[in-house]
Image 1 (cartoon, helix red, strand yellow):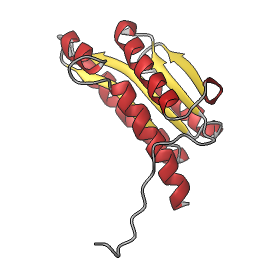
Image 2 (tube, rainbow, N blue to C red; image 1 turned 30 degrees about the vertical axis):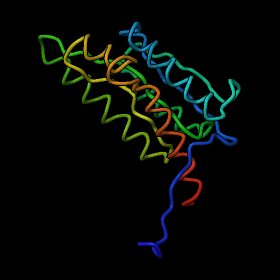
Image 3 (cartoon, rainbow, N blue to C red; image 1 turned 90 degrees about the vertical axis):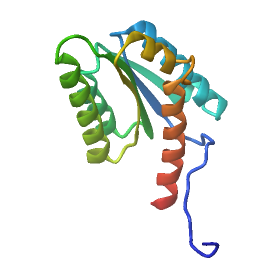
Image 4 (tube, one colour; image 1 turned 180 degrees about the vertical axis):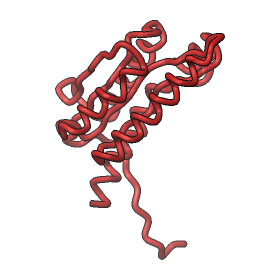
Amino acid sequence: MDKIKTTEGDLMVRDARFVIVATRFNEFIVDSLLKGALRCLRQHGATDADIEIVRVPGAFEMPVVVDKLAASRKFDGIIALGAVIRGGTPHFDYVAGECVRGIASASQRHGVPVGFGVLTVDSIEQAIERAGTKAGNKGEEAALAIIETVNLLRRVD
């Protein structure tokens, strides 16, 4: 394996612009994800001038906004943050499914990577765990993944 060429992205922000698309629905969870994503971007070299935040009503509205931002080509990477918590009706399945499908489609269509930090959980307790307590901060993880992916795409072009 020593002779096989391997290409990877690193975790240092260099001359890159990021937009974070964050939902207002379940804002008490999403704000923790947002803080984690911002902390991560800054720790890895991004300045506030490199970052923009766009607020959307909820996860269902997120794909159309992500698509428009990706099409604008103003950003090297997009970070999607939200929380869809299962309730007693099938509403969860429709919202979560359309959010995932739409965001993935926008990323692939425009070639702009999207870090997926939208929690799809069964309970508020699970959301809290993934927003900075027991299970880490998924906003931070999405930011880290997008930094690496932006740098990887620059190397494979």
